Image (cartoon, rainbow, N blue to C red; front, side, top):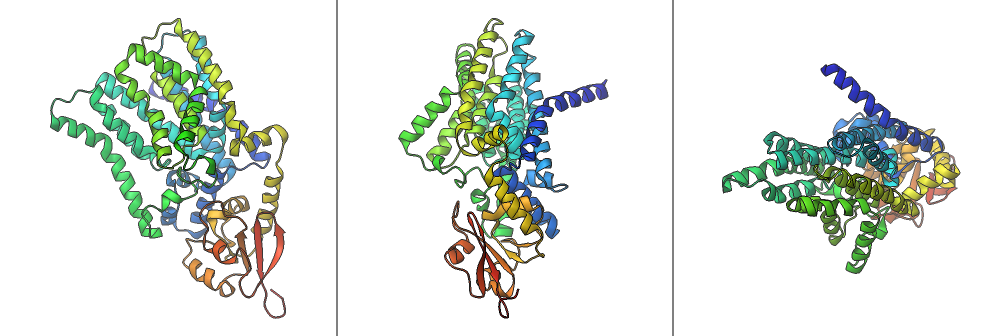
Length: 470
């Protein structure tokens, strides 16, 4: 019976993952590659090519990079992302089965969460976030078992899942802090010692995860907080500058805009206020996370934010909600699918949707041409900074031709490139903090190098020796 249950769950996850997998592979066939997947693939290629697994200290988030090490290519990233989303969808369905709603309503709610543009984008183009959402949702369900049913082991599991989630998403520790702070509202501590023990159980695993990664980051990069500014970090504004350091008025407008596009989240919040008012504070964790991050000048991507609210809404529907209200919630969920279409209006989700609808994008085709050229160059012949060039390295499918910041000779090669490399790849416009290559050589090539090929957004320098021969 146990094996039959495992097999049934596996088949269900496979079926739910299949639509995401097909959509993701189609986008890959059309040449689209998300920034997130490019970053993960480039780091996995670097670790694999150098044969230094300990260099995972240069990569954040590390868990998706480790999972991509066996086959660091876009198809693998899409497959793992789709599998994570399929497992998440199955977890949502198991939660919906506990409700007294008609089967058609439960199926409709599941389809709504799967068809939301935010969900489709994350499930096909953002493996780290899809994995993090799976871990956060699972932790939230265990946390509800702990606070509602008094199951102590569920509290331990929730804390471990959140700590594990830190290796996929920067914001995991904030969930741990929120869980710990609101736990006394649900589980009345018998004494101060009991309250302290409960807080330690919920916080200690995340503290260990963050502390260990800060130590590893300091060991390999010289800065314990380097991962905060990494291209894969949730805090970096490189690809979403409009969301960083917003004024209070802009925060208020964007908060209202996102709430207006989440009618199911608002509707379930009203139900909780009626049936379980004591749990309303826990339900507001996604909103508090977003406002807190914005007030610090950090970034909460819209697709992640909206998907998280959708999941909290489905997980938070009170079990004793009247059967007749199921149809109202289904209408709100369908309205949320339509309202969430604004996710596709700008930024990377818009590029992804354009590629799906209209075919290969010119910028993707140009990147593929550049990457094809770079692939054929000798090993350690190209000086590049992977904070800027990670997309080209990922498309090249190998880190062999490149000398990158983790390499011991990188700093010396920046100062005297003619002694170490034959080529240099320098970004014309930095998307974040300018690196050493951009700061030194964006305006003119170093001595002994000349501009060669004209690539949009890049300066390509070739070393000249003995009358111009290479």
